[in-house]
Length: 289
Image (cartoon, rainbow, N blue to C red):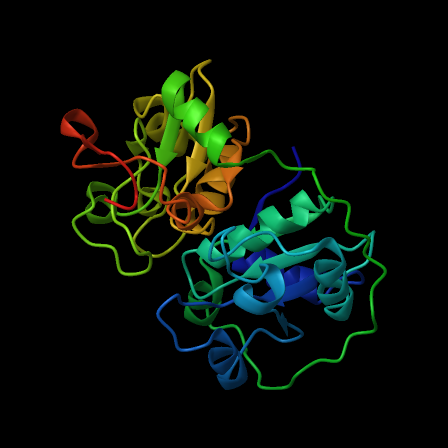
């Protein structure tokens, strides 16, 4: 298993060394403002900004709000950021690594294994007193080649099958899982048979990941560390990638991610949904009801 995390002290030393990594800033907030504004106000020296919505993910539609990008599009943006076949890459976001984990997952999906996440992100870097800059680098283009299919994925049918035969983890906050609130998609609730394992439990209050033993205990308690098939989903495949990263960090098999997630599930109004807690969930006939 390749290295997954890097802390700020290690990264600072690495950046000053003879072979620094390609540094990618993917700060993003679903409710705005755009991450590029934070990048322009200050970022790690040498970091290139990539937009989760426009670069790392494909165009929203029936496939979901954050589907996979076309391989050619992702290859172009990765090359523009200076990523080559032999590059070490470090990705970071504001603090909790949600967007960074999706970038990690996407690079891995397209065949690039030498990628790590900065533990604690930009907040940890600043808290440790390391410098930031507003200078925008212009790296020479890389030669990265996008080879899709290197991470396990699920479609709606696959997610439903795992919900019926194994453990399908819905990693959204409990209120969205229960269908009490739904700020982003037209229908609230969850995939029938799913369990709620919120991704926020993967990290500490400072945004750093819990240690691998803690994470493994957490996923074991949720039934995600046994032999049953396991899959993960969220609203649009961002937080699900965070849990896939956390499970990999815990030494467990990287689970398949339902990239379309809830935003894809409810795009077909014939699909059933459930509301309430897993123990007392109530089936709704279809997304259209």
